Image (cartoon, rainbow, N blue to C red; front, side, top):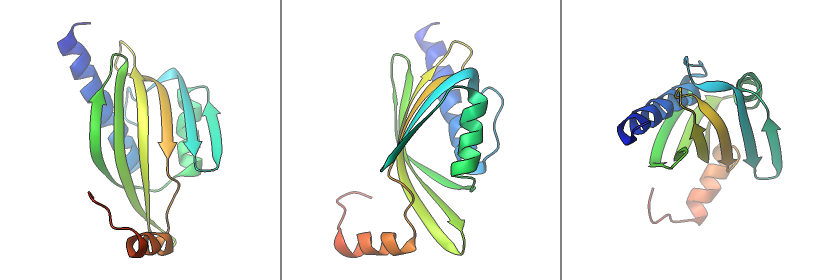
Length: 139
């Protein structure tokens, strides 16, 4: 692929990933059938060996629609790295987490590998404690 085609494929893969994270609906061409995903949480780590298993894990572990605020996307030789925050409502509370995903994108534009790093889910009490104790230099 040319540099232009790679950029277009990566941009499309990023857009599909954000759509999935916000809606829970899986866009066509999101994950390769043999996509490998490695998820690191604050106190746990899990891996999934297919696109279907990755989608099922997301539905199990984080089935909530919400909003994604993309902080940064960096293209790499194999795909991209995206940093973002997610916000959603569940159980009468507003929740928050920050994540970073490194993704490899195959020639068809599907994500073939995901390496996900998540802060864990912060409920309203943890968010309030953080706001009271920490002054961030940048939002």
